[in-house]
Each structure stands twice: as C-alpha cells, then as structure tokens.
Length: 375
Image 1 (cartoon, one colour):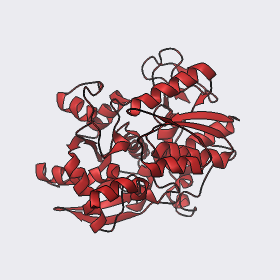
Image 2: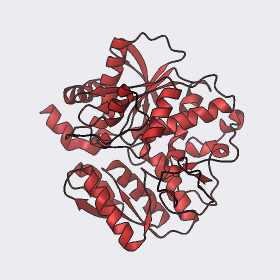
Image 3: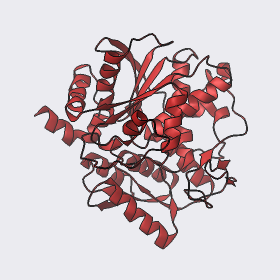
Image 4: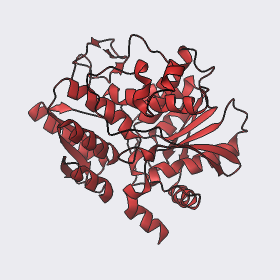
C-alpha cells in the first residue's frame, strides 16, 4: 500500500510513521486496482465517497457529509473560467477531502491520539474529523495564523499550540514533541492518504464535465497537495480510459514565497528551500519548501503545465474581484484570479476542454485580512 519512491521501501497497511523508515523520504500510496463504474457512481449520494472503487476501503468511514462542490462559471479578464468552489466543504476548505481519508485510516487502526502542524486550514479540518472520530488531536500553528482558523481548531476540541515566528517554527516544535512522545504524526504534508483524499477533486471535475477532462486547471500551491491530488486523480481516470487526455496543471504561488516557481523556471529537478521568504497575504501557501518538490515538478512537466507567481497587490486585487463577482474567498484562493490573467496575457486559449480554477478556502476564515483589504 505504501512505497518510498526514493529507495523503493514498501510498507503494508497499518504503517503509522509519516515517512520511510529506511531513508526518511515521503511515501506514495497505491491501490492494487482502481475502477470507475460511471453509471453506478451516478446513482450514489453526492460526495467523495461515491468513488469507492478508487479509494481505500474502511469498515467505518469518518465523514461530515462531504458534498460535491460546485463548478461555477465566471469571467476573469478575457478568459471564461469554471470555478471549483472547494470552500463549500464542511470546514470551509478543500482540506476536508484529505482529512476525511486520513482520519478514517487512523480510526481504522485504533489510533486515539495524534498531532499535526498547520498554518490553519489543515489544522481546522483535521480537528473537525478527529472530533468526529473521537480522536484527540494536538495542533501546532503559527501564533500569527488567521484568528478564525485558530478559533475553528479550538471549537472542534483540539488542543491548540500556538508557536511564535514563521511557519517552519511550528513544524520544528511539533517534531520535537513527536521525538519526545512517539505520538502519531497525522501530517497533511507528509501522509500519502491525505493526497489520496484530495484526488477525488479530479474525479468530481471530470464527472461534472460529463466524464471528460478539462483543458487546464489552475490551483494555489504551497505544499502542493491540490496539484498532486489533481495529477493523481486525472492520471487514474486516464489510465482507466475514462478521459482522453491529462489536463494541463498550472500552479500559482505568491511571489514572496515561491520556491516551486523559481525551481521550475530554472529547470531544476528538486525544489530547494526559498532563500528569503517574506510574509504574504496568502498564508496558506507560504511554505519555504514543499515536502514533495520532485513530485510537483514531475506533475507539472508530465501535464505540460507551468507555474505563475503573483504579487501582494495582485492577491489583494483578486480578493476584491472575486468579491464583486459574488465569491467570498481567502487571499490564498484569490491568487488564482491574477494567475488566470497572467496566463491569458502570455498564451492563447486553444487547449482541449474548459479552464478550471480551484477556490481552496472560504473568505470568512481570514475575515481580519479581508477587513483590512476593504478598509
């Protein structure tokens, strides 16, 4: 079920470490067989669990009623875009897809306690699903994270550990705690089952387009779980013969923290740590280095994709533009507005299939930031 792409180490169901025991690398996950009985899927209740033949099986899935998220048309500059509104999930962000699957896995193994580090959305999402499963969760977060996200974590009964300083300080504090206690690290950055849940976004998009692939999909990227989930999901659909081609994947980063953009432009095979990361409105993607940098670059190149970096002014403008179009999104999601505009300036839209942009989180999660932008 679990394999290390770096050293080919393999681990069976029940493995709880967040990384390869032999080399410390991030693990991949694969099912022996994936299928998409499209007619049967269409008769099932809406939501990620309708794709049962492409997901691991649990005796009891941990769910909060995840629904199919809307795909809504919107004009952005010269482009007609379909917005995948992931903020419609139970805790207000796409992270619920990964949390539902990861917590279901831990619950199936009888895990009673776990820890996580997060800039906010993942911590809130995992806290909600942990509460649903009766699992105690401790979340290490930057003290500067959006108050709304920190409040969500506390509301769901998780133990919040605010850490002063930039985002990596929270990870450092967590790793020290894991080393000391040996508690399970339920990492949305490291655990492959989180990406396994996010891949259902690709399944939904294909189904909403009549089981066809879009031409291009843009998404915000920090750690890259959306992009990796989309790549895995569309690849499985393509290999199963459901869609005719892989859509082009476009990563959007904040210029102030853009290690993937820099690596892609240079033609690197790895993503080195950002040398001088600066504070950004897009806090959800302010990660100095992704855990799966090589995989991100491979996904972009295999899909003939690219990376766009946007400024703070463009992020703020994106929040306002989305608002005037009727969409309340947090700044991390708003990066895709400028991403679409920049891509439209540089390229002609001749791709096979529509353009989709992912709105990853609801604006009320970052109400304080939105208030400052509108004052």
